[in-house]
Length: 377
Image 1 (tube, rainbow, N blue to C red):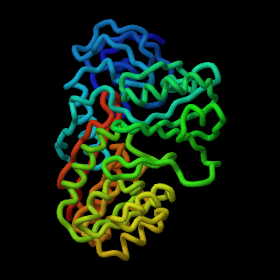
Image 2 (image 1 turned 90 degrees about the vertical axis):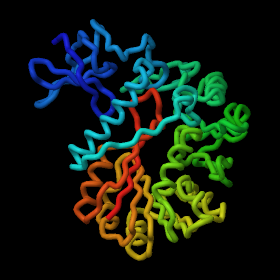
Image 3 (image 1 turned 90 degrees about the horizontal axis):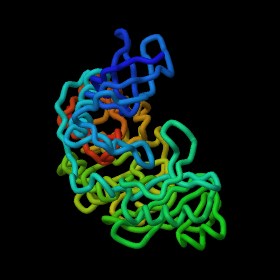
Image 4 (image 1 turned 180 degrees about the horizontal axis):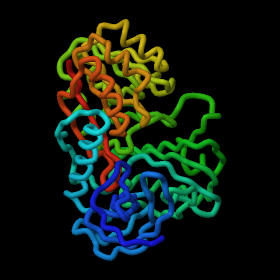
């Protein structure tokens, strides 16, 4: 079935929202203000999904740029892009979390392009680059405008190797380091990248320091080490002055290593390589542990502030322990406002409220967004 659809809103994840005969329809690649001709590709009881065939009338915020590389919003103009990111977070917090706040907006307009320092690439032996949106078909990608010049240079080298499988590359935007992590390594890859490793390799992980934090091969770091500075600044503002801070899902100590000189810091994370690297810096006690260990640390310690930066799935298992904690502040960092809103609703049942909410543009020109919520009693 084909239909003409007026796009009036955006969904979490970036799809445009319109209606066909009163039924909600999600249309990827469209913007509020677009009128499109689309074909319905999926039907459910409460919603439809359609593929845009033609933009009949473009949104005033639509730029004449096609997406490049991974799924991007390169066709979505600022400041409207930022306004909609704030609106999506605000609506999810209200609808799922029953929290009504007006979040602050934090960005660096100078880093809307060329900001990425880490990316996962894919190869099929002939092509190398990103997956096409919603598929596992490899796009042969020579460069991406969102990537830092050093990451694009690493991609150019990787493309010459005709690899099969996935490769994560992390570059130092202020140095020469290029970390390469794959499920496989071979002679050609090691010759091209001296810091190429896989889980099968013995010995220490390759790493480099950036802003005093160890960036460790094969472990999580923000997709932009440059824009990460915005996140660290906001988290430190929310943490304030305190004596004891607990950092959950701490990874490499990204959010707390800089606080270790003025307060006692302890951190827990699943990834042993990341916490071991953080512990070597010597400004906190970092340990490997699962959610059960984290919950015990919350209950048994006398913490003034608890910081957490869970994966996209959120911290549902930890929310009861956090709610019952004696801390005066909780700083919740999230890359998924829907799971953040769910967990905030649980915390509200224990008497916590949102004292400050900040939306950070850590992924410019994409639908992704980072949110920080300061919770207080």
